[in-house]
Image 1 (spheres, rainbow, N blue to C red):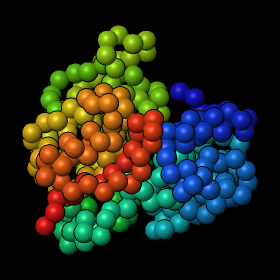
Image 2: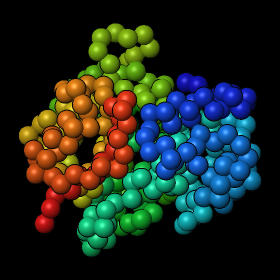
Image 3: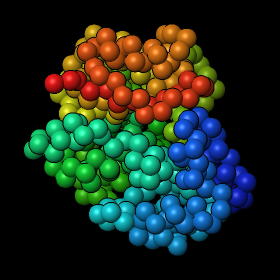
Image 4: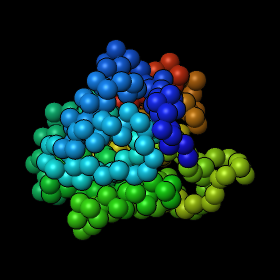
Length: 287
């Protein structure tokens, strides 16, 4: 896994690769990639340790670093100089995962809403969900061993073990095992065959849990297509999805994702769409 080293150029490269996969460049360019003290400092204002965050981000320092969110004070962990910083931007700066008004209202009405996080990485989405909805229960799925270990640390730091659980497995439409390429930060993914560096990991049939969930987040690097094609997916009530070209059964990932979701009776609201085939959207069940 590349952590970007201490050179600013290396630090930028990981974020540039991530940023190039994201559209709406005008809407997000001011936040990333982090190239200078001004933008690093702006990101740093989201945590209480602003100077330390900004300095570490500029240098792309190695290792897992702990901060506290300015909003609410919850501890957070991330690795500077990696895609973790872009996830931090998506979740806490650009608020790309902020629910639509109807979903937000439903989650606040529920006493203990169930949130399912597929492709949970270090747990930033789960942390945001618990901050927004203090009574929520979060079930997260993350098969990458290194990311899962950091995720477990985050759960412990937030004293949330009773309400925030982590399943170290791929979320899928069946129980079994799959070949998985770890160590790719947010881009670790299922592979076909014996790809160098890949390992066998368990897959868990997530569809029964999705039927119970009040909110689903899915960002699993191409594994989303098999889940959305399953007839049981029709029980989902609200999902925020990041889709990918990998594994897409059609030639247009954006159109294919929207058609699949609408076939399950869901209303679709795009968040962004990129010509390279990656995009994000919300899908909710109408009244």
